[in-house]
Image (cartoon, rainbow, N blue to C red; front, top):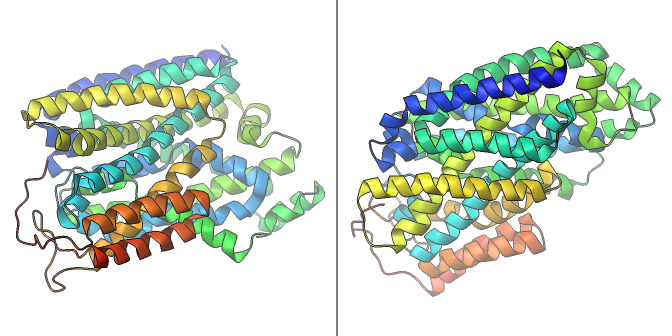
Length: 476
């Protein structure tokens, strides 16, 4: 029995297992919209840790970054450190703070603590959901390309099958099915990844000098050099960092956490794990370059698996990528659906029963899951797919968030749910978000951040909001 048979078999078995798990948790998810969205704020440390790891370690971390390593070498590492190191910054600065609250989304938190404005809330929701929808599409696209390489089947077929699986189990069990499947997926992913990279680095005897001389022998010695300008390095770092800080999926896990300490520890450990494995993926691309310097970069790691390693290694790699892709896709799709319903739909409709919001979110999971399938089929590059969303959300939302949290009305008062304590005004937030997003796309994210901060402060000074510090708010 060949590789194609075993690949199909493993795909079917794992898919049925994960769908079955979701029905086991359906009753818990049906308890309320809050349980479906954030598990009622009850998640313990071990579930947070593995859902963070499984969500972070998507297809891009293994396939996309190995391709970048093959193509541009260690020049990819600044983006890696920015993108993955942002989880550590998030853990140290924001995770414990966010875990004190039981909001469902970042947009809802900003709307409650910083600026009470439906338009601002909608802008934050659109930008933060865009980064997640792009990421879901990337997982489906990467999985389809890998499956096609392993079996010879049309990648569109795998995109459809793979997407159907995570859409079903996410829609059925909500946050509960996502985190419990992440527990299994994350554990298997880490175990296989350690074994796999041991096999890859064994090809250069775990020696930097062997890697360097090997690249020189194939005429690619420049790949081991950091040939980027300071501004290019800074841009890559900031792009990765701000994009992650705007990602709803990480905020949502903090809101779902049982305690601040659990949220911070889980994100800190997962950030360290992500940096290690993503740098290993980048360097593995360089190792493939030594083996075959004439490949298309996007096929680098697949070539190594299929041509240079055993069938067992190939199957192990496929399982690792399948776990990485489906765990990230389900987490991100769930987060995007919650944002869309919680921040775009509910604030703009008459109040309904809680069960209606839950049902609406399930429908949103299916609808936007189908949308991501379309974007996955159209997209050309896993990493490039993220860039636009990273820039828009990172340059538009994060500066307003940070200014809003620092620039308090009452400096000695802690933030509390239902109490606005920020000097950022309605027009300051609106102009800051829009200016940051537009400038980030047209000129660059560094200028976008600067424009967002300036516009937020200036317009908040010129057009201040009425003081509603003590006005209670019922959060949706």
